[in-house]
Length: 117
Image (cartoon, rainbow, N blue to C red; front, side):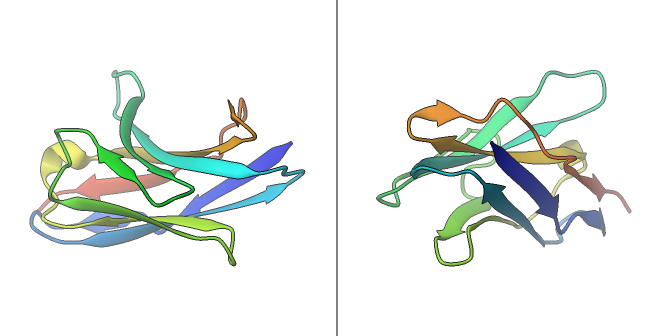
């Protein structure tokens, strides 16, 4: 069973930047993909970005060009570098990992990102 711990959120002004981290641990077979999601109040969880084991990345239109996903396989960590943040980016951010073809059914506590002046 995979455990996920997100960190790095906070309060930032519009136009600012943050770097989120997600450390994963537990009984792991082969992590072949990682992803970042977010959930704003009253909205459904939204997939933002994925990165495969080969480094192939995909982004939602809402964040493409502003957010960058990366991974450190030695540290078992996935990152989300966020730039040019907007108030509409305010949400709780979550990560997930795909272990041997199966996305974890367990989620971490998430990390709150608030973009406000």
